Picture (cartoon, rainbow, N blue to C red):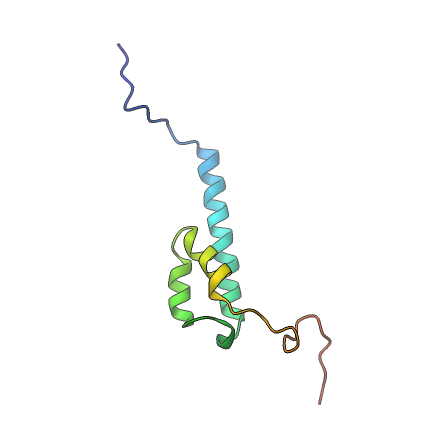
Length: 85
């Protein structure tokens, strides 16, 4: 008689690889944003956010949704040509 071990199934390597790729992509995007964004546009210290981003999916999503302050379009220079004084 063949016993089943509690109904557990073997993890699918393709799904695990996909989820790992999503997690690494989220972390890379969040760390890049953290490194390039001025500290005044971040809620809290950058070091703390760098550690939080390392926590699975939760860290990068938390940083990207809550850790950044809303940008003021009037003072944000991205997309505008550089003006020399």
